[in-house]
Image (cartoon, rainbow, N blue to C red; front, side):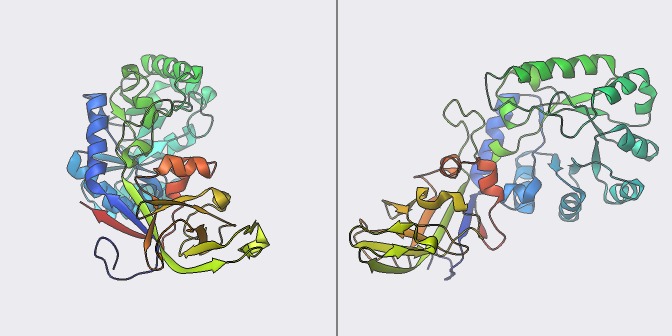
Length: 361
């Protein structure tokens, strides 16, 4: 049996703490005051299950959710008939406009072309004004057109202007101040509307960015929004994998593909039922630290598609059949990401569908 009493299963498990998720929502709510929190649940709720995550956050008070594309929006709408669902990709063509209206999805309009497709809908929309990300959003030349022709916005009720901070995770980066100023200038000149600027890190970069709505993603799921300080958020996930087999390796035998690890002394090796097909980055190589009933152990050799090998020489029992913590009290998402030379976002969203999600309430 799994430590939580589940039936036997050799697939990796992601344990999602719903109480911690709600606690993070409340932490952010205390930070932003009257500003509305609109959680970002794209990429299947950052790998945790968009339907389960949004359901919990709705109970915590959320009324609007952001997703990346129409497919995500439609799936969420079919599970939730009441919430406001906004799609960051916007309306790609005329056919998309009809689909958005049918499913009651609010588009984030990223260009004048998208705005013109939506003008006759007479439905709410977000107007994305790029202030320095240079990704999605209306660029400066299109913003000038909006300023010169404000009637372009006349048919859109409940108008909300949106921009996105590029460098808020760096508390000293000058672009954050520059973007805030550019967004404020545009809002002052455009027809009156509500405004949304801050992502998770932006929430902690001054009250002047909170405005009417904030759009946190990573912080809700326990990723540190302020890398220069201790994490103000509560850990939400734990990741574990089962040991399939344990064996003694005599020197100078090697372990795994390409024989990158060779034993110099008798070594006890445990093989975990988790690999890069589950989302364990191959870059982790011999950098992965796991915990087996209080014992910290390191990976050896390369991580393969379905398996990872661990040096368990210091574990005083045979760990075969035991569950090994990959993310847990010994190592949070951000720590694992540092070992893989990436970010917590990628760690969570890389977790494969075959990783079993469970929800502790």
